[in-house]
Length: 68
Image (cartoon, rainbow, N blue to C red):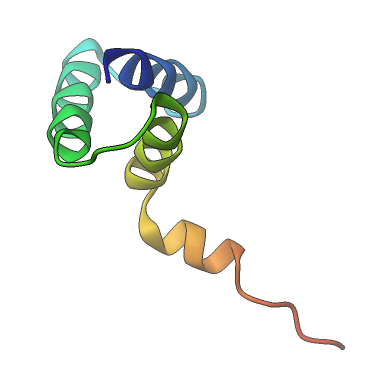
């Protein structure tokens, strides 16, 4: 699980500018969220990014486009 957390934090800090305290708090929240999941590292990494970016962002992105 540690590898997944490291991957997610690396990617997330590239898109979100966080202070060192925010990085620690985010890592702790992410670890707590992923602790309850039983999956391989890649699945955990994807779920971690979904969690940090927020469910509403994923839902908005996957909304089907309507024709104009």
